[in-house]
Length: 366
Image 1 (cartoon, rainbow, N blue to C red):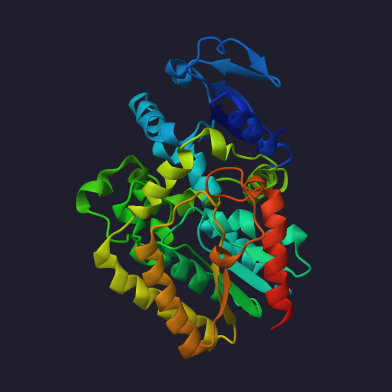
Image 2: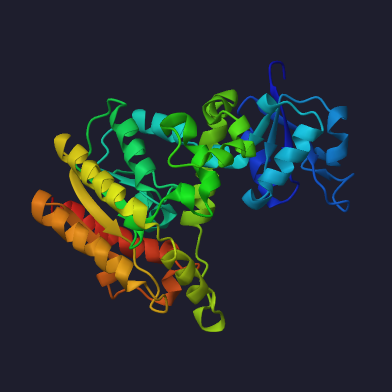
C-alpha cells in the first residue's frame, strides 16, 4: 500500500508480536523482525521475516520499534546506534507505553469525566474504569514522583476539558520520601523530560542513552492509532485480563520488595514533596475539584516501614483538616486477601474490582 510507514521490530517474542498486531490498520506495516536469538533468525512470523541485528543495514525501514523488555533497552539502543541506525528511526517501546503526550491528548478529547486518577502503577490496576459506574480517566503511569504527577495534572487541566468532580491522587506510604531521579528507576525521568523537564537529575546521568531521543517527537512519528492500539492491548493484558495470583507462602519476594520500597528514603526531598502535595491539593480545589488522597492496599505479609508511613499519614491528616480532602486509604481496609494480588504489591482484576467499588462509593457520596 502506498505511503505506508515501514516498521522494523526488535524482538521476535510476545512483545514483538503485540507490536505487530498494534500496527495493523494504522497505515504502518511490519517489514522485518530483528532478534539476537539464532533459533529465531531465518523464521517467518505472521508473514514477517526474522533477521539478525547485525544485518540491520540490509533492510529498508522508516522506524524501528524496540519491543524487548525494558531492562534490555539501553544495550539494544547502543547496539543499533553502533550499527548506524539513526536516532530518528529508533523508537524504544517504553517511550510509547509511558508517553504522557499521547495520554494528555486523549484526555483532551474526552467528555463527561467524573474523576481522574494520577499516580504510580499500583493505581493503574486499582481503579478500573470499565468496572466503575462513573466515567473515570486513569492516567496513572510508571511515575512514582509527586513532581511529575503534579505536572501531569497541570497539563491535563490545561487541555480545556470540563473539570471532573474528583481527582484521585495516587499515593503510597513512601511518597513523601521518594524522588525518582535519585532511585534505581531514574531512567524513567527521561520519559517525562520533554514535557516537564528534569527533576534533580545529576549532570552525569544526562548522558544516558535515552537523552538522545525526543519522546515528544517519537510520539508524533507514529500514527496516534498505533499508540491507541498499544495502550488498549497493554491495559487489557495488565488490567482487564490479569487474573494471576502470587504465591506469598512460597517466596520471600514480598519481604524483599518491602525492603526495597522502604529504602526509597531521601530525606532531602521530604520538605519539597510536602510542598508539592499541598500545591497539588490547592490546584484541584482552585479548579472546583475534590481531591481524594488514595492509597492502595498491600498484602498482609508486606511489612510497611512504619516511620515512613507515620510521617506520610500525619501529613495527609493535616491536609484533610485544613482543606477538607477526602482519603481512600487501602492500608485501613480488611477486605483484601492474597488472591487479590498478582505480585507483591499490585492488585489483579479481582482486587481492582474491590477497590474500584470502594472508589465508586466515595464518588457517589460527593
